[in-house]
Image (cartoon, rainbow, N blue to C red; front, side, top):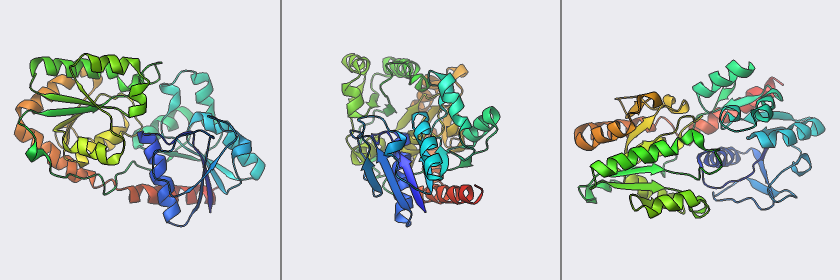
Amino acid sequence: MRLVFPILTLNFGGAQRMLAEITNGLADRGYDVTIVMPAHAEVKFDIRARIIRGRHSITLDAGDIPPGDVVVSNFYTTVPACVEASARDRSVHARFSLCYEPTFLPDDHITFPTYHTTPHLIVLSEWQQKLIELNHGIRGHIVPIGLGPFMQNLNLRESTPPAVKISAVVRNSEGGIAWHRDQDYLVSQLAFVKHHYPETEINLICPPDEFHTAPSLQRLRDTGSFQFCLPNNDEELRYLYNKTDIYVSSSLYDSGSLPGLEAIRCGAALVTTYSGGNADYARHERNCLLSYRYQNRLAADIVRLIHDKELRARLALQGQYDSYQWPWARSVDAFAQAIHDIWNSR
């Protein structure tokens, strides 16, 4: 089966990692996988599928998309080209929804109707499945997020100083399109913890390219309250997770929250807000401390784990154990099954 994935970027990020792992896994299983990207789009992952380049610097149109049996859109801006290409080639258009754009991006009058272009839908979580079915009447196939064996606990924490190490991911939030991360809230809660527990070490993890183009993040670094960590690859990211005692997420709205899962695989205790997609793996008091945003409890939960080393260790151990239910192989299996179901129902 020939599968075509128009992808705008493969820069560092959870959605891009999902695309890289799924396309690699399908290619490894013998599918004919082609990724078509804009001429100047970045590729930060090791990709084993075929990559071809379109004619435009940062966009794609139907003329860039080669013939295939199934063309898979993954962001609302790739949908029109996929609709046109599938009609031209009489192929099937399936949408791989890595996020539900209408509820957190501007121009929902544009993003909302793009979900009416195909009945063939793939989503990341039960929460996202229900949300889209409620709004559009389409029940998507669930392909969960995953982890590979590379992400693991290297047992480095025994060599760290007694001070608790706290980490969180921050991204370029300028322009308002990342409001769902609730990053101002995250920073305020971490600042509260740092003020009352100055011996803690708080690391903010950010993709280097984003940090260097985000004045707001540079100003935050200049306050001196936090250490910025700019991992260039998975080895450096894994090391940061492995040096983390408490990993913190403030996201309000995620189809699937991959960093939290990566952190618990590497042995960190997770403190998080409910974001929808993370409910598939995050269990309050079992493998993490989870709060709803209205409870305003993020800092209190961090402080609780600073004081209660036994609870911190128990949550970290259970989280690491639970994370093994989420291998990338299961994700690839689910995607392949979804594609075959879609193909057979066309």
